[in-house]
Amino acid sequence: MSPITIIVGAQWGDEGKGKITDVFAKDADYVVRFHGGNNAGHTLMVGNETYKLHLIPSGVLYPEATSIIGTGVVLDPAVLLEEIDQLKQRGLTLCLKISSRAHVIMPYHIALDEALSSFQGELGAGSTKRGIAPVCADKMYRHGLRLGDLLEPELFQKKLHLAYAFNTGILKNFFNKEFSKTETEIYNTHLEYGQALAPYITDTDLELWQAYRAGKRLLFEGAQGMSLDVDHGVYPHTTSTNCVSHAAGIGGGLGYNGAVRVVGVVKAYVSRVGTSPFITELLPGEAEQLRKKGQEYGTTTGRPRRVGWLDLVQVRQAVRLSGITELALTKADILSGYPTVPVCTAYEINGQKVMEMPASLSGLQRAKPIYTSVPGWSQTSDAALRNFVNLIERETNCRVKILSYGPQRAETQIYD
Image (cartoon, rainbow, N blue to C red; front, side, top):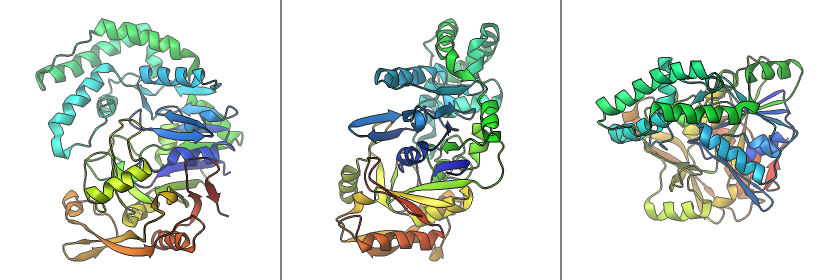
């Protein structure tokens, strides 16, 4: 394993990053979550056990690795404490550390997120309504609350007073909505959260720097996917943070140099939760068949995901912007049994062939997929699957070095 390995999603999220992180975590000294919040989820299967994680890194299943929730994560302390408690109840020993600089999702953020979702309509992101956008906005307004603030009652009270007035003022004066929780109630509850989380709160930036200098192996676990990146994704149908690999250093709190291994996770087809143009989306009948076979329902929301054929224009952009050095192809087994498998290799926009994703939202809305079809396969050893992989490698100029064909750890092929 390289000193620095970064796992990122190359599509809309839900690519199977949790399982691929688990493949690398057994050799890692640190596993770091560096962005997003509990709007994203990872599902891991180990034997007969299924673990659904939203904030804690997937590496928690390896007790010899230290799990880090980094500075760039926004977290709901109630959700985090519930996740910690559930893992402990299942007999896991947690070696977990959380950045004191991570911003805290407050109850008024969740209320504001719900109001914003209705207001934004078709230009919204299809929010999970977990408070992610409002907490990120407070961070930029510079009156956000950080996890370390919960350990300093006087400072916390002062900062909360300002943030509470601002956010509830927007709810009341713009959205005409009353917020039910008082400032005092939130203050007292979050002081208790702070005390419960105190054993885990530390300067993770410094710890990661010391580990890096000591030659430890660091694994950075991305959430969501390239097309949801707030700057480079299909804006405004994005999340509120950066999902590209370069966000690992910022959100993880580590300045690194030298060779970095960046693994882009690609599902053999595409799924999407939320609104936005979806170039290869299947019609309802075909979509339901693929959705059921792939169990495409959101880990966080339970919502049925939109599904479509593999879009290599999308993956090509992810390889370019994240500096992906290799691809991990997941859910290859789900496409078994199809006589042919269409793969989108370019778009047609206004009669022109386009090889890269346009920045224009209207351009994407007009885009039509140009497909290359490959023969289907019945099992993962078939030559037809190799043809599918070859097409991906040729169109993206990036090798597929990991093939996943099931949810279990053992259902993984690693190539040299």
